[in-house]
Length: 155
Length: 111
Image 1 (cartoon, rainbow over the protein chains, first blue to last red):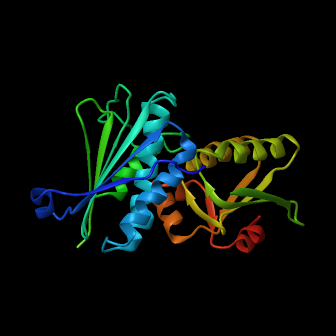
Image 2: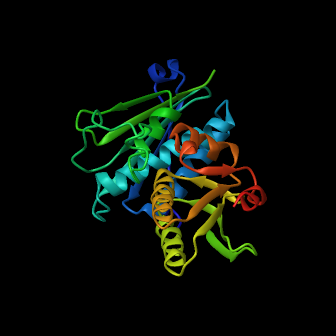
Image 3: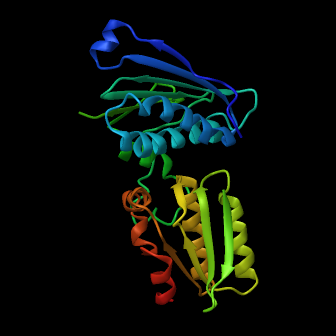
């Protein structure tokens, strides 16, 4: 299934540019998991040309953004057609900041069991956020817990 | 994106994952393996040689299938993971849970 919405691109203000973030891309998705792959492709394609390390885009960004979008659609919005997911990506040659925001009530991101502990290793779920934390350099949430910000930096 | 299923001469059911194993198709893989288990198959090889991506839901399905197959006295092996996919198994420590070989031929020889 192809994503009908095209990203909006704009330049960033000098303050963010000083942090190495030069441009901004925004996407809004309906709550349909069939669109995740396409949304990730759209973002990755735009960033591959400008970011310093292609493998970071193809692996770290792709896995982290896919997992965040699936979480937002399945758990945040509970696949409610009336709710959307906002994606905001700030990027430059050495840094990427991706924010994924759903319309759900949020969750307690501090209370996630470690899926690598022997007691949890046979659980079928609970690895998405763990993978995100492993593959990006910094993860932040808003107070509500319905918006995740993932930061990647490469020299 | 498809699953190609064939019975190897040694009686091993080989499932090739062509494309991705993700939230959108994991149930199809699960059902195919459960149906085969119900039909009497006990030895399974999932071949990821042509797989570009497995997400956390896909990993979860493999965990759940591995438990079900083991409960029925069967054996599940995985093969053909590229370097990035191996990294996902290592990060989640699932490399300790599965019998993983580089090639499907190695896996078939080990059954």
